Every structure is written in structure tokens, then in C-alpha cells.
Length: 476
Length: 161
Image (cartoon, rainbow over all chains, first blue to last red; front, side, top):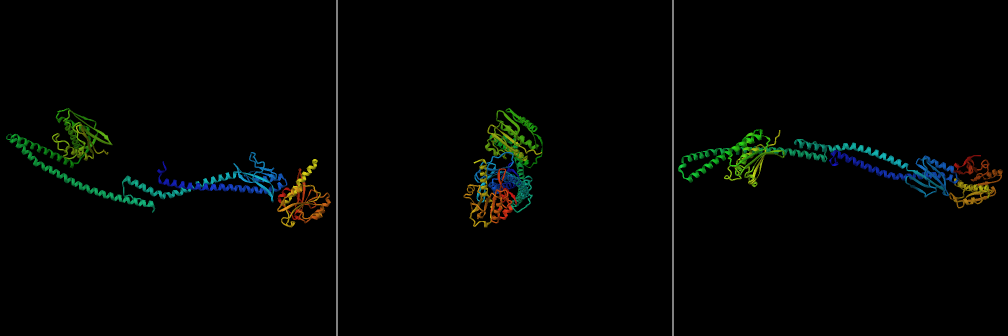
């Protein structure tokens, strides 16, 4: 898990802990460095003081050539545990007396006095001090101290630093744990509420405000936004409801209108057709050829108009009809319809209908029968000028939807006019070429829409067309 | 020089240095000096066994601002302005007499004589394991109003008469 993915609570904790640990570490290091150098200085001062005292004590021993006394004086340095060696040189620079702490091995000590003063060597501190009585020089004292004091100090310091950092981090943890809650809790509450809202779409929830800081402002803004969304939502719902009611009313009006218009048109038309038929039966023999031709045109057109009105009535009836869904075996339905249609089709050409495997569907039986009849009839109709009719009916799975299709090798159509395909009274072919009123596909479209499905087509002129449709997805 | 003679010469050489060193570890009262830079005199009463050693040792030296000087005296009456006096008189009876005369004069008396301390002398050279050491009579030193450094006392055998 990357740091940026940590919850805010952890980020705050880590930030606080890191900062305090860093500050402490730097402070301790600075202090340590300072102390280390002062302590080195103090070590020199300390050793030179001891040197001074020892040198002062050794004057008489040097002056009166008393080696035993000198050694006794030097051996008193045992009291200072870090002094590991010392020796006295006489006025001529010859070694006079020496002292060495029992460290298990013999130290290499200088044979003659060196330069006065103290200096740090690799792992010890050494120095020379003159032995003076009054102003006369009696000899030189050499003294050497190990670094044990510094090591002890470093050890002690490390221990203290570690302890301080540990305690401080613990304190920082406890304090920050309490402090961060004040920052992260409200944010957490906000985040949780936002999540709950997006999951449950409940905009009535409010986040309680804890403090008057930025998070408090955020909480206020969040609550305000929630209130706004809620009121917008309510307004929108009300508007939608209003519109729906309006639209339903308008739709009903329109359907009632079109139904009554077509219904009322039927009576005079039937009368025209009826009388024209009687007229043809009774007077045809008395008419000349031109009059008979005109009479036949009138008869044909009145019949066509009757068909148009019937289709229109069917279309508007479908609009008002409720669909009742049930399990349907599409395979059985299609086999039966295709068989019927193939039987009534005039056999001027070989007709080949392939029915592939079709899944069951949850749909309205009657309207679904209408859909299949219409699509297969179309396929037969538009392929009748081909040498052989080939129709394929099948299904496929597309984006989780069950898609049914009817594919033919007929006349097809130009995709440029695709948007006219499913319109009422819209035709892509002339009536002389293929009969029809242009209502069929509009009805199919309407049925599929009522099933909450989709219908579409793909075609090329003279290469056939494929009609696809889906039904609403099964939610069981 | 015979071996015994050279041995004696070395001894006296050491003693001459000791005499000089005594000057550094003994404090005289202010009245023992005329002023702060007046001479500190090392005197030899009687036979001088040091030859030129003593003169060579103190040559150019000074203690606490007092230049050192060596004077030789024949009779106790001659001893004037002296701070350290090495006494070498053949007869012991005379020694008491000499010391009587020097009493109260702030002189550090030094001798090799075995009865020197008993007779009221302050410092006596002795030979110990072939090394020159010394005895100090603290009471006598106090009487002469001299302060002897503890460092010197450390090395000495403190005795009393």
C-alpha cells in the first residue's frame, strides 16, 4: 500500500510521528555533536589538570632524585581509571620514573619528552607537561588517557537518545492519536455519509458538524448540497410526473382520435366499395373498355384504402392494448409461423428457410406472433424476385442481451433511408414493386418498444436485409 | 683519582645539587632578605668538600627572584646574610657551639655529622642504600622560622632531637 493510499487518520499519524522523531533526532544529534566536542575539550582540560597536579607533586622527587617517591606519586594515578600510563623525564630528558595501568599488555611509551601540550591520537589522549618548581624546570611529565570516558559518554548518550526518542514517540503517538481524531473523524464521517448516499440514494441524511474549522465549512457545504440535490430531485420528480400525466392524456386523445377517424372512415368507404361492386356486376357489360378500366382502378384503390384503414386501426389498437408476458418457446412459434407462411407463398422459386436454435423468451404471445409473422412475411416478400429465397432465423448474444434476427437475401434497402424504415406509412420501395401500406414495421417497432426492447436493421440494396430485435432483459 | 675518591666526589656533587634544591623547597621569612631581589646565599662553614661543584650548580640560578650566591666562612662569627649553611667542622663539640650562635637567624643548617640533629641542626645528609637521603628536624626548622615544603618532607626522614 502506498502512502498516498493510506487513510487520512494514518497519514496524520505518520506525519506527526515522523516530524517529531525527525526533530528529536536532529536536536539530539546537534546536542550530541556539541557535547562530543566540548567533552573532548573537557577531557583535555581534565587530563592537563591532573598532569599539573602530578607534575607539581613530583618536583621534589625529581629535584632530589628520588625514583621511589616519583613512582609512588605516579602510581597514585590509579585513582583516575582512564589514565593508562604516565612517566617522568628528568631535566636531561632521560626517563626517570614510569607508571602503567595493568591492562594486560605493555604500552609503547615515548623514550624522551615531546612537545608540550595535549593531543588526541588514534585511540588515546596524550600530553606532556613541564615539571616546574618556582621558575626552574626540573623535568617533564608524560601522561596518557584512554578514550574510555568518551566511549562511556557516547554509550550513555546513545542510550539516553534512544530512550528519549522512544518516550517522545510514544507521547507523540498518544497525543497525536487524540489530536488526529479531531481532524480525521469529521472527514471520515463525511466520507462515510457520502458513500452511504451514493449507495442508497438517500439525500435526506445530514452530517453533524463538530467544529467551526474548514472541515466544519465543508460539512455545512456538503449538507447544503444535499438539501439542494434533494429539492432538485423532488422538483424534477414532480415535473416528470406532471409531464407524464400530460403526455399520457395527449397520447390517449390522439389515439382515440385516430381510432375514431379510421373507424368512421370505414363506413363510407365500405359503402363506396360495395356500390362500386354492384355497379361492376350489373353494368360492366354495358360499358366500353375505357370505362371498365377506370372502374377497376376505383375498385382497386378503394380496396387498398380499406386495407390501409384496417392496418391503421390495428396499429392504434396495439397502442392501447396491454401486453401480458409469459414464457414463450420462440423456436416453436417461429417454426409454426414459417411453416404456415411458406405453405401460402406462391412457389415460383425455391424457398429455403433455416431456423437455428432460439432461446425461450418472456414476452406477450399474440404480439410476438405478430412480430415474427411480419418479419418473415417481409423477408419472403422482398426476396421473391430472386432466383432462390434464403432466409435464416436465429439468435445471438450481444452485450449480455439476447438478440433475435431474420436474415434474407432479398432486395434490401439503402441505409441512407434507414430513419424512414420504422415510420408509419413510410415505404422504401414503390407500391408497384412491392405491395404494402407501410404500417407493418411501424407496428413491429411499437410492439418491441412496448416490450422495452430494441429493433434495428442492416441492409444493402439487392444484397438482402437483416432485422434484429431484443426484448427487455430478463430480471428474475 | 682512586675509586673511593671518585665515589666521594660524586656524592658531593649530588649534595651540592641538593643544597641548591633546598632553596626551592624552603620558605624564608621576609626579614631574612633585605629586599625582594636580594641574594639568597648558600654558605659553607669549615672545610669545603664541594670544590667548584657548588659554584657551578648555582651559577646563574635564582629562586623566587633571589639570585643565588655561594659564600665560604671560616668562623661562625663570619656567618652573615646567609640562608643555607653547610657545616663541616671536624670536632663535634664545636658544632653545638656554632649552632648556638646561629640560633634565631633564619638559617637552614645542613651537615653530615651524625650528632647534628641532636645538637639542634636542621638537615642532615645520610647515605641509604648507596643513595643520598636526608633527615629533617622539624622543631629546629620551626625555631629558625623556616617553612619546609611538604614535598621535601615527603622525601625526608623527619626526626627530632
